[in-house]
Image (cartoon, rainbow, N blue to C red; front, side, top):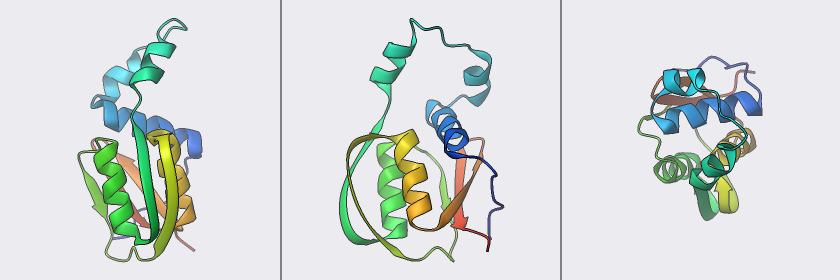
Length: 121
């Protein structure tokens, strides 16, 4: 299984990840966040702390999914490679795109599922 390229930039990936983590994509898209609500939301934002050297891609992604409370993560069998990352309290919506790009991976965001595969060439 090779997920199609999502065609989303980093901000699109961040929005979809935020929606998946929040558990309700429909409610999140319908609700407009006022300027007064933004600081409270930022305070609640989940973050990643990871310190790995030459760790397997799947291990890194599973650790991040756990910390970001992503309930469903599908990793293609073709996903290989190792990475070195040191993140301390990096917001999930920032960490995932960085790790995916660094490992040469792509993700497709479905309601309640993140499917990770290799980037099409």
